[in-house]
Image 1: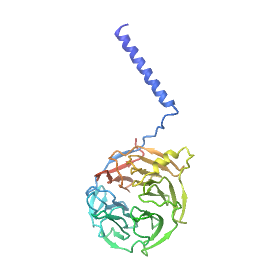
Image 2: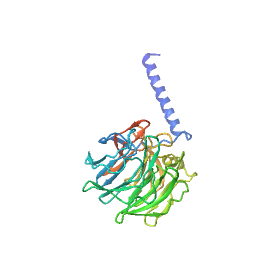
Image 3: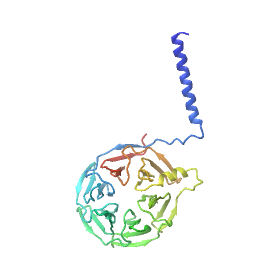
Image 4: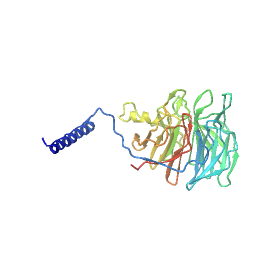
Length: 340
């Protein structure tokens, strides 16, 4: 056979082999599900402060405020304003430097409190002080202490000009209580606990359609896989967890069974990203509230981490900071869920 004929036969055989492999992959019903790769991560302007984890953030209008946290050596009290692509120094937090605090905003004020810090002897001090930040005057004011007790790793959101705060760890107990804050009277009122008897810390929460969703977290070494919807109008909780018999249960469990992650609502969907379960993960999952289903999206393109922050400004969502092992980060990434 002539060399040219041999080459043609080889190419035909190769193409047939590739086609066979492709069809086998597509038709193999026992193969792992193929997830859509929708979503792109774009590196943004890095945080101006030193790298850190366990920081807090809140948004007032299109302005983002971020600070506090831990850098591996010390607890921090510096604060920064992100506006129009630039990080600027703001008034430092006047309270005790700390990590694992909570924050939310109501109108033109930011609210920060609770958290903990570890002393040189290894003992942990838990806090319940609460502070108000006046964004117009760049000033802090101490408010009444949180009446639910000292704790860290709690979650907090603002809905309908009210603050809602709960869960966390006080050094002894894993908590499941919830509280409502009224800024006009600087007062706290206990409301319905979420129905699970299992308390937790380092859970995630997001707000969508005027409701709060609580998911994940851990109780000691137990990583929790559930999803609760909270209606602030009647203070009722609804279990939105997937049934173990659901065809979506595997995705649901992988998505929510993590702690120290970030979660946010964006463009009618919700997302949970990064964190630990207990190993650190780069995954991000999307939640569709109209179908209650979870779908995996493109993985995070930065370094694996936990104890990070997320914020939304000017119609864009960002995540950044955090820690991975002994590394602490100051990078910030934009999430574009509709890009390929």
